Length: 208
Image (cartoon, rainbow, N blue to C red; front, side):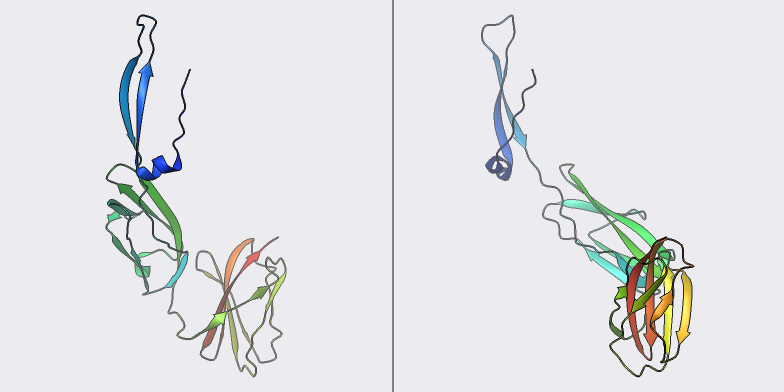
């Protein structure tokens, strides 16, 4: 029958496990004994990379500080390095899925997949904070609150996950902060509200 051995935490932390393999045969009285050493190797450490939005001309730098000697590769480009610079101008508009893979000198592998969404245009210079959208998810309309008062002009832009502008509205100070999204298809959308030289970004889910 198969023999199963579960190493202890101490053995795993030590990195090595010494066992004596005993094989019994019908032709011999004494078992065949062979010492075996099993080594445990860690997976390469991966950096923390969150899903990111980049505007045209912006870059995202990823530095790798591995706990063990390892090689890293960024896909789909196939660039191998310990430091990667992702240029928005080299990405397709919308969501770009990238994968960072690693392999240690002992053959242990690890990987991390993340999304970089490219929006064509220049990022607004002043960011007034995250925009709270409600209800979220929404099927017919969404609303949002602005702390500021006496807003002269309000510009509302909605983008799909491909970074394409799907809706845009300009409103007066009497705007009721409600936006009809009934005409949008089901999915995830980003909303940007601009007023004066301020901008707020938010996200919402459109349901049927």
